[in-house]
Length: 395
Image 1 (cartoon, rainbow, N blue to C red):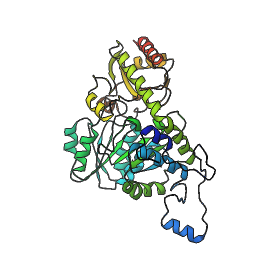
Image 2: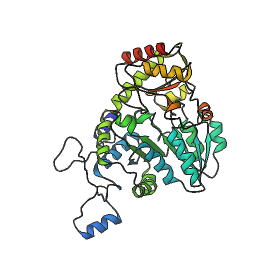
Image 3: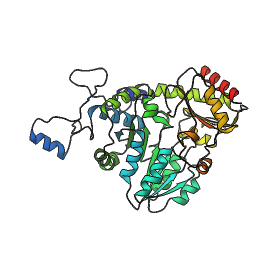
Image 4: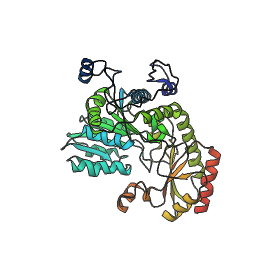
């Protein structure tokens, strides 16, 4: 394996372990345990397992390890720990790194389940959380204290596509010794450079773009070997949030086409955003690749000139107009997932963010008319035509 491989080559070959049979496709090791040659060998492995030695599926598995090594190479991280879902990655990372009395600063524009972990779960166990506008560096500067243990944010927020300045926030956090944890789902491993920009820990819901075909749940936590193996792994292997070998195999297959799919999705997102901006049915179009996006310049710098795979459309007629739009679509599917090969539309106010109060949604810009569009890999002209006709019907 070469350190000079480009991302696409890495996504196909990195971390591969072949058995004595020389299989082409990665093997699925569907086993919960492992056999030792002797009692002494078992004792030695429990004292310290070698790089290619395994004890129990909760601790690690050859197929899962292939996925961890491959995604770590793509992301530019030293190591990774794969989890049962994206939220297992978020909650596992935060819980493993925090204790009662710690202070956290977080952007308030987050996925609903992330808000629940920060507000309800961590608060219940004595962690103090301060929420800020993730796009306002002055709010970060005012909130981060000498005793702040960790900062948390989505590099591109769900669902309003706000972009947080990873490098600037990381500098503020590191100045007081705080760790930087970034949920990088919307940025994707293809466009992300979060670790180079200062993130200590990056988390992904692998359910989204990494699988990208609606098949399985998965997550992954990436960072330094010290953080992953000394703090993250002990918590997760004992609390049980491990990824299954079959899921890891599915995600390895997803990684092989990740770059191709995500670039096609981003091209479709840009085409749709450009085509519908200014449509009479819309109050606004949110897409980091548009000049009209509030953090357009930052997004272009942070995501390598790409606008991403997601577009948010805010319909003038509120929920009624949003529902007319959703129901008029012929190609795009109504669901609450994202990052799929199929185009998916979501009404956050009544689904993914419905547990928030009306005031909270208003503060986050989640209006009754807001629709999140996750662009797939269908023909771009077909998608533009479908979305335009649905906007016409909604108007």
